[in-house]
Image (cartoon, one colour):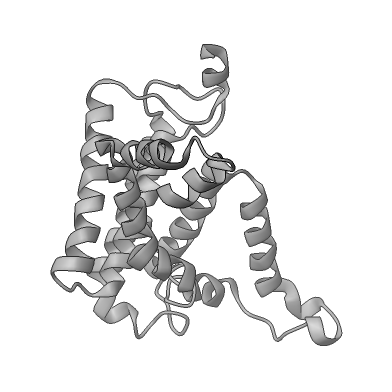
Length: 228
């Protein structure tokens, strides 16, 4: 089992880094609860914090490769985390001005931030979900830039890299419907489910259902329905 664990991408952090990641994860959960259930917060801030914090946690908890250290965060990951904090912090600070520039007239720093964002999202997706999704995303990025070479219906007018990456910074790019749903609804369900599991409530529901219907014909199906 230990040998299989070493082959996994997920790290087993110890010491101070583990405590810091623990605090960040708790803070991420509390922020979402506060912003979505207690005090209304501009959703742009919520989306930036949601994706940025998820990226930081993923880069810290998942190794770049099997050769990366398993019990500590590698130097290159610290650099990626720093770049992530800079990029998403920039989006939060510059929100009032960015809304007029995204996809229209980006500055050089806007483009640097956009490239960092896209690279970080592709990287932590690769670490957590494998290479298929990033490859598909990269193919569509290439299509946005070079699709004008395709004939007929599949072609389009040419878009520059600056417009493409700048567009991805907005609510129709990285912060589009999937992220909006994740930040607004899915995350709270995940936190609630984790709370039920950690508090023992999930086990109680299942044990209660087993005690009520586990001895009858079709018991497993009845247990599943009752516990749900």
